[in-house]
Picture 1 (cartoon, one colour):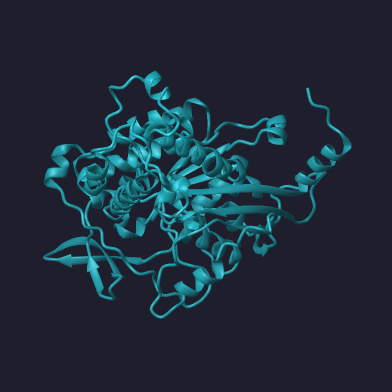
Picture 2: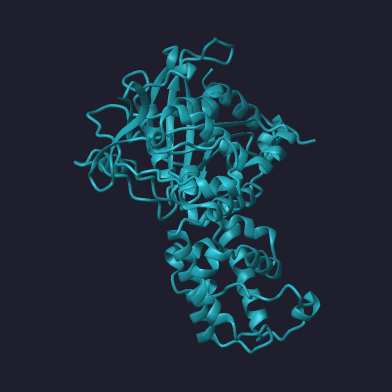
Length: 463
């Protein structure tokens, strides 16, 4: 058993007064990570003033004194662009912040009064909250760590439903005449890889989520690098793995397998090791309404992507020793975003649908006794709830401004409380309108249930 030295004991004592927490805000592209982080910082900055945080006991009881941005631990990583995001929200007309295109961090120092004094306590305490933002596209790569090149090719073949196959036609045509044993032609492989990347980008624009490799969608500084010049080979399901492994080094199969392994080792593993393995808490943001809008194949695609993604994280309660030597995520929230895009009586259905969408990973988490909370929220409100009376009948509606600038009063539709079946998709259409954020005079951003999310994620640290 490890021996505790005075330095470790001193650290434990200091943690009793000034605590630290590392929060992973996880979500695929367009799930609302930037909006969530912007709202989180804004709400805590205005705690005790204009912020409406009634579901967070420390705020409701007047013990939450506020928060300040302070220097982050790693000065080589860009700071999360909070000021730029607020400038977009305060523009006339207000616009949504730019989506994330690279890694950024932010540290908040939260000051609060403990609920009860203790021998280690003082009149006020601090909680250092480290936040991490990253492109959702890169997150899609974490499940690659569970595969070798062959198994990844077989998995990708299974994702090609009828709609995705249509979007990938150029790549499928380019790869049709290539065989695993062919000698690799660098120019040809680069051309086919670009066709594959273009197909992935078209699939993303069409609403699909389970798209790998993620860096093909947002290369960053890897644009044009050979490490991104690979793709899955179709038609490998009937081939002998030993024969494939014995192919010459210069063969198409071996060349692509080496690039896949290099991508895993030098791109995916460092991203996971340097960032995600060190988090204490996590919230997974899911754009359920966007998936409903996109139809049954895309809805199933989102479920598959999220299930594979959540297997990539290390969940489990932490003992004192594991806190010091093996950090793990010990509390999880899953949140359906953009709850303000449906009327309030639909919020409960939105939450139960989210739970159904993530049923399998949630079963595993609960079996492992990991605390999980599901909720629906709107990080930054874009609509106001209204009622419309016609012929004596009251109809809930939303008042908002579309992205094109049109003021509207609509009932956007009903959210199913369970996974839609084929009959449901055949009879029910969805058209959830996208809205601009509400104008903000000053103070805290309007939201729905951000206080509930904060209570679950950090509330126990503010007691």
